[in-house]
Length: 138
Image 1 (spheres, rainbow, N blue to C red):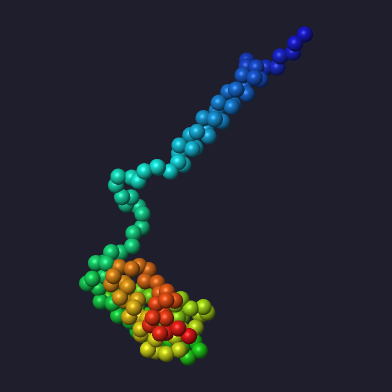
Image 2 (cartoon, one colour):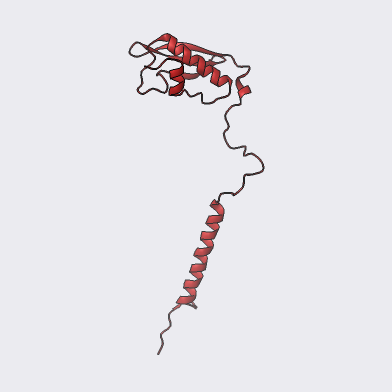
């Protein structure tokens, strides 16, 4: 005598097949939902943050001010139309958190930062090579 197990009016085998089909459908739906497009969209995405263009600061008054920092060093602030844009208390691209030893070095870097902003380079990061070219490394 063969014993047959039923779940409701279906057999266990039929129930397992239905569950397998449901799981496969869910997996395929999730893949379609999270799949990345293989080609670039025809229109730019308006929700993506974009940096300013070079002309964004063309009519902006960019200024700097040398500031005192701990251990008798200095840094700089950069202002756009009088509003603080950058507050740099340490020498960029160098290890540690000390400021510039010489006020003239802070001025050189502040002017380079302003030049980068004018060219639309945002953020206006300073590399160690640029620090060496300005002769402001420790």
